[in-house]
Length: 280
Image (cartoon, rainbow, N blue to C red; front, top):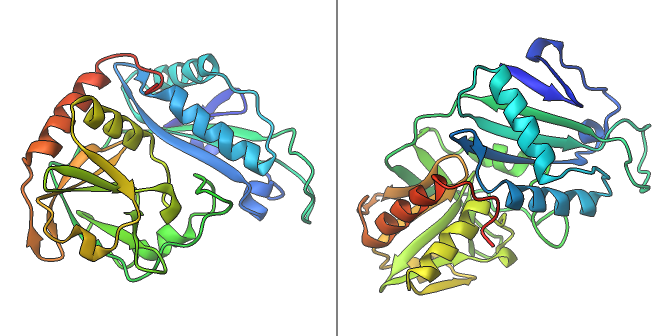
């Protein structure tokens, strides 16, 4: 497929990035993944806000607006045949010499990639990961180029249908390899909070807003494995797969049509039919 790179749409084979880009040399870059529905990039405002937060932390100066991103997505989508897609927006710090210069990056490399949407899974399996969740790059987790913890942990999971779930060094439930995680116990929806080193998911933000609007009790916090014992439902969320029930977790079966997961899936799907830029 074609890609968008610093204002130009080109074939993938034509794209060039300098080896002196600090996104390559030092991991100074951030990205967002999202999908389009009927051509509209769902929750694009929230994705841009999270990206801007990461860029501010890294000192990367890029003047991107929601309208800019909408236009980029539309141009690339049309160039690739007009179908909805899985998009990755990447902002890398840009070219600078070798060395840890803390001054702002004023000429970042901006790239938008598109690929075909995968078929959404009806269910997933899950397992606890042995490798622990690393600490965030700063005071909170950024969606940055520092991704080896996830890739290293992925080697533990041999089945593509299975999601690995991270624990922190002190045994607190954090997040999945590429998802946020939830469970239901006694009618309450539980999910880890940001203190566990997990990424504050954009889809998670919508899920919790829907749950609260529906009157489902929600508890975010630091929970260990024993705190989740007796759960009646488990499920995952991310921007590409949306909300996916876990049917098998470490040998224990769970329903794929649990009442909480089912209503949230239904409500989320309704929201995707609207052109919503931000949850709030």
